[in-house]
Amino acid sequence: MRNSPGAGVNMVRQGPDWMPEWMVPFAETIDRAKKYVVSSTLVRVDWNAELLRGDLGTIVRQLKAQPGEGLLVSGVTLPVALADLGLIDEYEFVVQPTVAGRGPTVLGGLRERLELELVERHDVPSGTVALRYRPSRSPAWGAAAL
Image (tube, rainbow, N blue to C red; front, top):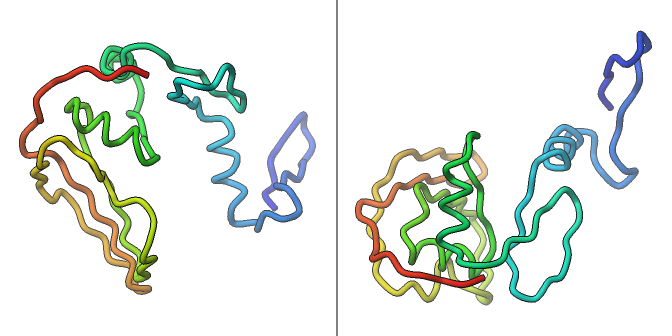
């Protein structure tokens, strides 16, 4: 639990019963963050999110032009579409010392080979490695619809 001043009284804030105390600051941060959902099938979204539809390249360029610290992307198909459009400025991979043996591959289905330059590496005693890369060249620009 964290103590937080409010109206002259110390109020105790905590997450749901199932959430460990150390996760509360992250949960509060992600809850407040603006979220964008890319979908061609959803009609509405919630949880402080905006549904994006239309030309993916145009929409993402507009979002990138807005002030702020950048956009974080996750998923299986969206990162591939953005990489094919040359719209990813940095790639962050966290490699865990576990092999699943199944499931989707990272950026599987790219139209072109993507050359990356290592920017930063962080090794964790557990064997996990965090890697940050920048593209050394951009793929051809194309169009993708949402």
